[in-house]
Length: 167
Image 1 (spheres, rainbow, N blue to C red):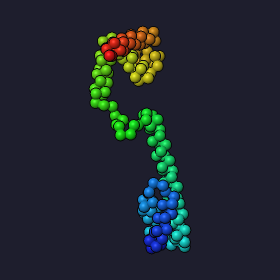
Image 2 (cartoon, helix red, strand yellow):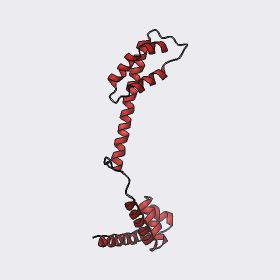
Image 3 (cartoon, one colour):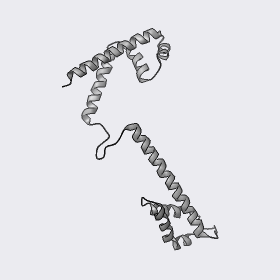
Image 4 (cartoon, rainbow, N blue to C red):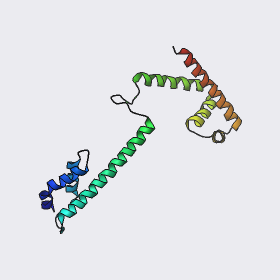
């Protein structure tokens, strides 16, 4: 089988090159070489057998490319468009500003008391319903609603102060 591969290498390479647009013909040819049965196996029509294997490799490559494109498209849709020659990461200034904002928000919420902070966190960050938070903390739904209103007032005040400080 290896002798037949070496004899027909150029035909197989042309087969891959004609069916592959991104120059991976050599890679596919190497994959075919690795997939060939080793000694002790007799195949009556080795060229036909290799073309069949080659066709399967081309199909597998096609499916792999489609999966990769679908994965990349899903990632792009989830994270937003990338701009060429630009990092998708926020600048160091923005990271520092965001961290400072988070510290300010956490500090302001903590100033309202631990219960308000925990209720807000469990509901808005962890995604629990008001009823679940109430049951977990052993308080009424009205208490949860009241504490969430307090937290929203604090956040609204922070936002208003931030808006006033903008030029």
